Length: 101
Image (cartoon, rainbow, N blue to C red; front, side, top):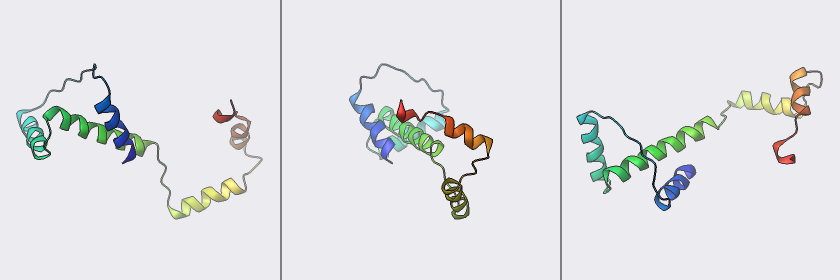
């Protein structure tokens, strides 16, 4: 995932000043330690990497719109032939695009 690569690059190139304290059960910590060892990484590096990958995926999912083929067809039809009498459409068209300012 591209965002994860960017976040990891930032992670390893940045000065680390912030802290995140977590409370875990012994079983959770042991599992994380085993996973870190298996990955050939320290517990901290492994945990940060996994958290960053998960966070990047969550952000990407929240910013991605997935449509079925039927919904995509309806969406493109609406874009190609908008209802000029629709009040919401008129309000949207009246907005200044962010790239125009």
